[in-house]
Image (cartoon, rainbow, N blue to C red; front, side, top):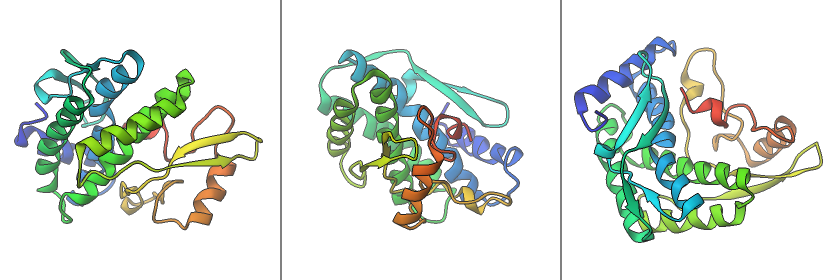
Length: 224
């Protein structure tokens, strides 16, 4: 379904049921912000945890989505393999297909959408790496896959922050903006690159509890 331009456009416009805006560019960006996380999760999670990647090919992916266009998850029905170059090529092919369709609904081309994809891949791997005690391996895999995908995919950036709870936390240093702040009643996310570096560090240090993600950039934010 996700490779069907008509279906995808309908899903993007359905997001207007949840967000009080009719700006198609904003709705498309918000949809891709969420979708880009879920589309890579089956592949990068299985690769990190087992060494064998589930297929990222769109015909092999099943999206879990609601009637308002909200995506709640995804799973793959096929196995791709262990070769990192093959996995990177598969991720690129899947991302390109969706990004090309979504970009028709936005006003700024594909690069901002690729930036969202870069942050999503890094975040998914970091989340699993943190949960399983494999942070360094997750960060290295994010860098390897991003390099294999190639431009306009950006390399992941991470930042370690000492929180007010006295614990060092690793976060993705985002290169993308989901445009949530352009929805009436919303504001910039905690880790939005539109904020100054000092502002982001201050908010991360105070907003992230010892066992939770900061508001605006965590698992609950992906279903938007």
